[in-house]
Image: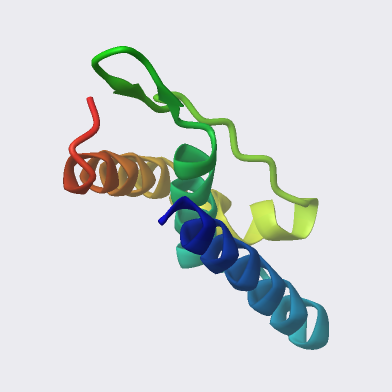
Length: 94
């Protein structure tokens, strides 16, 4: 199953990258959420009895992207935090 998960992740990155390169534009909050979920999945560590995932994230944006979201950045940060918490819960992660 791990191989299929890796393949899915690679295809996802390729397809998203292809369309972003072709159409450009300002980043959408859903894109940030997907990347946070992917980072959590890719950086998980398996212990003897638990699975650990990152619980703190730093998001870097280009000046243009920051300008687009700066007006609601506090709300967006809370929403993204809720999103990764929900994703962790769905996967049964601490």
